[in-house]
Amino acid sequence: MSKSPDFPYLPAPFELERELLDQLSNHPGNQRCVVGRDELLLITHDVPRGGTPSRDALVFWRRQDEVWVDFSGTKGFRKLGELLDRYTRVITEQQTLLDQTTSAAAVFKLARSAGPLARAAKNLATAIDQTLSNDEDNRELRSYRDRAREVERAADQANQDARLALEFQQVELVEKQQQSIDKLTRVATMLVFLMIAAFPIFIFGAVGSMNGGLSRVWFWLFLIAGLGGGAGLVYFLIRRIGLRP
Image (cartoon, rainbow, N blue to C red; front, top):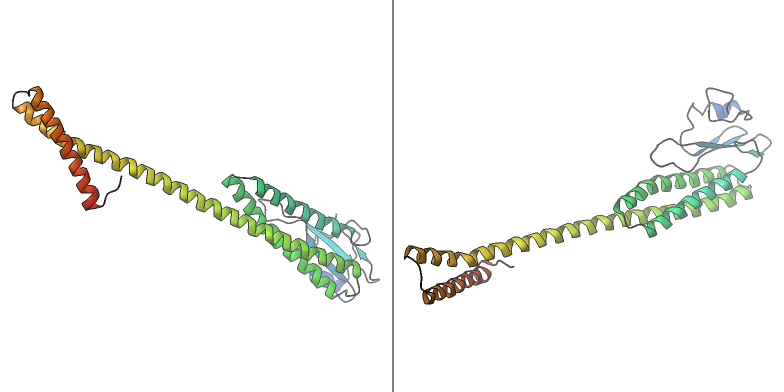
């Protein structure tokens, strides 16, 4: 915990020079390297948590004696390596879930978290690179910079894969909806054709009723004529009007 309410994200053991403190506020801000007169401050963020814009700051301080100290008070960059390990683990988990899921809701959730993760990984790599430009002889930091660039590429690839999967799900959903609409249209068209085909039968039946009933011969004649007339109307609509069943 910080001993200063003005900088709550700074660990208590950190005794920063005034040139660094003058560049800070009560919020950690973006991932970056803050350059003082004789000291450096590397501000990083932990892996983003889904559903919240807030970030947990993890701060590394290079003292005037050129020794780096992490936010736990330990010398060196071991905590930076652990941070990169967490990024790698989360990215791998996302890729595995993306390969296994078939649910549009699950793909949307992954795509929603992949974007912030990719941006955070990119900003982390940039912050480490900025720090290295002010501590060029630090081979350990250079190694972590290279690892951070690999994490950045992996996170960007995971983000692209999630977006493509989401777009595919959307296209597939539209195609299924269109297929359902086409099927309903065909059913409605067939019902119309059946009504058209039955219409002449109703007409001939009505004519027969007005004539006081039909003999068996006339019944069959009217039935055949009605069916033929209905079939003729359906054929006319298909050929002349362009309807398709």
